[in-house]
Length: 363
Image 1 (cartoon, rainbow, N blue to C red):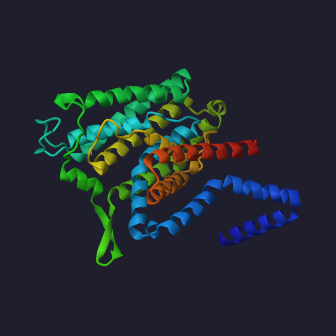
Image 2: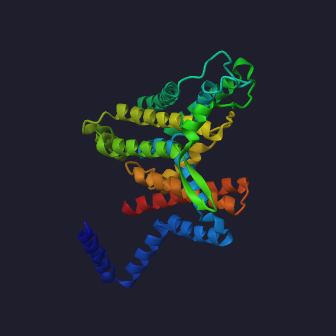
């Protein structure tokens, strides 16, 4: 393998030398433009570290890893929708709904403002299955309308986003809760999500904990990698994303594949909601707001193309990680939350522009 890599490197170098001056300039320009985000990120990290040395420290790195792990399930789900040349605007609201359900069912029995006062604390595995089911149902609805009526995913998921948000508002009004935040979660639930997987020493007798949900994120990444790369469903997904007509002629059930991709995405949102509920420990109707924006940006940065049929799980993981580095760095630089929304929008715009440029060049 090492010899093959060296041979490829030598071949690329030989091809570069054989180019004339104009071709070399064009090749260098293409390389810089196609990797502009990564180049800017390296410059940004160096600048942030020069302004605040704490940015590259053990606690900061663990924080980035933890935040990335918390954001991975929704990105893993929405990545499949993008592979199909679509998107999912309902993702954040599904996270909010499943987070609310998780919190309501797993409040401590002695909590004074318990939403369902007579309900005992539910078993964690049962709640996990329930939120996966709820998320999967929303995804199933999305996939059905996209596949059955050839509606654009933007329109379908915009509609379900509004429907789910209405359900969230109604849920927070149940049993006289009157829209109050859901908190007072049981210690069992909190420890299951945010308990220490292990601790890393930071010096002076101090240490920082890596939370358990990092392990859950790793497991989800492994499962999704297997689904995408080792199953017939994964191959069909990429075939439909590349060319649904050709996939249909080849015997792929385009309708079933589209429905399954969206259903799987909804299940991922349900898991995200279950983790997020215990992570933030005080859930409101705005939990999950705009989460899909970060997930879409991470997928595009990681190479999941809106052109369709292109993407890797490893790219999604890298995209989530890079995006979290940017957001943490902005906090270290004391950039206001309002300005961060502007920066997020620019990142999505630039990433999509670079992605489309790559497609047009190949075409």
